[in-house]
Length: 302
Image 1: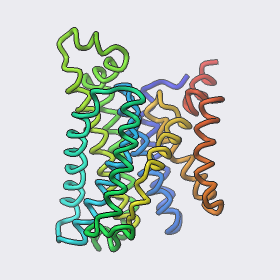
Image 2 (image 1 turned 90 degrees about the vertical axis):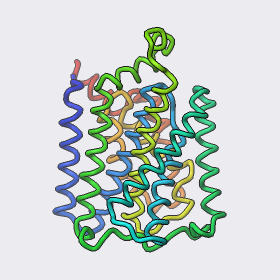
Image 3 (image 1 turned 45 degrees about the vertical axis):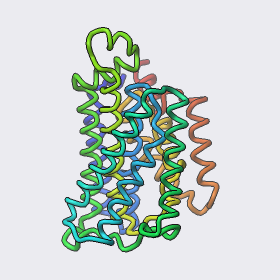
């Protein structure tokens, strides 16, 4: 059986393999690894909010906030690279605190639908804001020259560090409170914990991570547009999570690497790529309710 203490070594091992792919592969391989790493962060942030029992479909909105903040800074003012990353993360974090403070009073499908609506509202806001490029988006978002040759390595290392950071929080005392809230929030409240505030903290951490991932995405793609940040982005993250397995912190990483790799092959199918992700979720729910990691655990326990 796969033990929980192998989650961290597994994450480190996958990160090392991806870094090796960058070193020995071509330019497209480097881009593909960056997409995998960012996708793994998105899926991990989605899983993090599941610790309190909520499915966060607003993650795409905070990813987009981070990306658009980065694009606006690069196009309008001159700030150091790391200051740009920090400001984009802080903006996503600040908006998430306000959003979470309002919406986390509802649960389940209501929270999911509000997140979906917020994501689409932000996408429409980008399309109608000329300062942000409108429908055309923003272009010319390049990493600094001194980092350009190593940007693939930088993104991969930072993304896997973020995933390990989320894992560390999950295993901390705070993470145990998150899980207890998911199991029975009335019990958590009865021992003096502020359940609502703790939910907001969990949501803000995940959203800040998503915002930083969006900032990295903007520098990696050099171009962003409103269509990049619709609800399908959250659907993709959900597919990574379901295929890999939501019970293990390693699950979203495995699912992201696998599905992004398959999607790179399926790009020639055009719109059928979305069908691929939908089919992945359906098949995982039907035949792998605990994802690939669940299969490995079950097989290892025989």
